[in-house]
Amino acid sequence: ITSSRAFPSYEEAVAYVSSQKSVNYRIVSDNPFLSPVPLDAVKHYKLVHTSESRETPPGGGMVPSVKIFEYVGD
Image 1 (tube, rainbow, N blue to C red):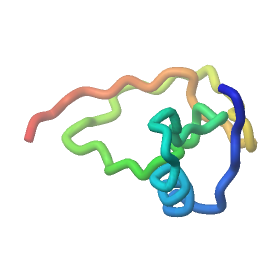
Image 2: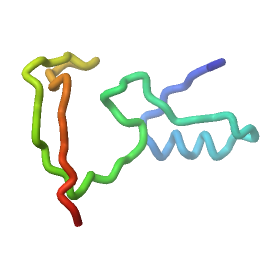
Image 3: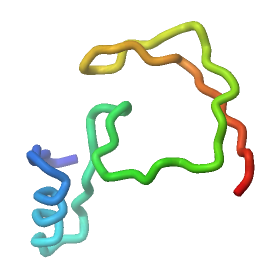
Image 4: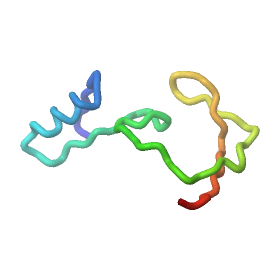
């Protein structure tokens, strides 16, 4: 990483990356709990276990340390 830049929206980040001559640009996040790109909802999975231990992600709140999902088919 040689530099970083924050954008107010995903669309503005895409426009910036698209306008660069080099292909060495990526849209990323410094927060592992927050996706920098839009994600579709995961379908056909059922939550089967949530750990009692919790983590505090950047920005606050509490999330389970572990979640286990089961694929339930189409």
